[in-house]
Length: 99
Image (cartoon, rainbow, N blue to C red; front, side, top):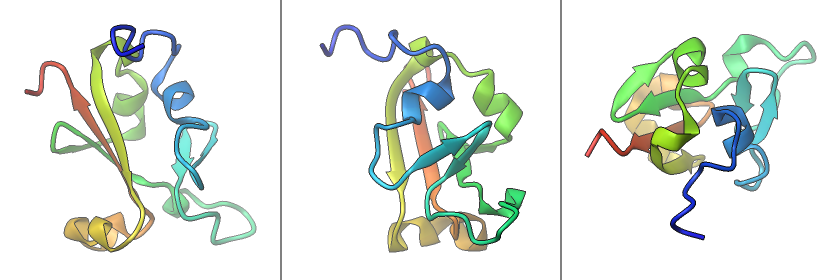
């Protein structure tokens, strides 16, 4: 229900896993456009943006799902707003405190 929000998830990666078509979570990486190399280099990971600020994977992992208001994934040309850093897709998170 809407009132539960994202409280049923343990962490941000659980929250994203299976919620968006074509998005995979591998460990602490979110892969939006598929792996581009055999070895799955870190460069395949999506850009993580929380309340308009680009954050590291560590900062994203420390974010509590209880604080999240909305999550959106940009896969196509709309991710070009973030330039070459958004080429692998962008995960946008808006927190309740960010309003």
